[in-house]
Image: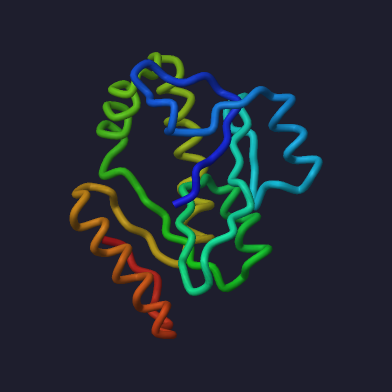
Length: 158
């Protein structure tokens, strides 16, 4: 799993290893030198995935937004995109608030999320509802395994 860079400040209780927290200047320099696989601005902050160098035969798992997914799909058309959806908007709001987001930030993220779901459904190879961590992990591993075996499994939603 890659470790993204961001220009936002750490949230209360968020560990220093959650992201590579950097200045806008450092981020911009990395963009100029082509050091990101994908990057995007989201609600006023920059986020980016450093260009990975995985061992041969290993997968790279990215946790990215729709903007980043489009960039990855353009560069790597055979990449497998899995859209993870919250079980409900209410639970998503609760999760966001639980990680220290203000009421205003939660509202902005929920609005952005509604915009991205439609685009994500059109772009994704698979759609998985993130309601039970064990089931979600199992389903994503099954999807990856199917693609590794050359399967052309149809997009599905659970």
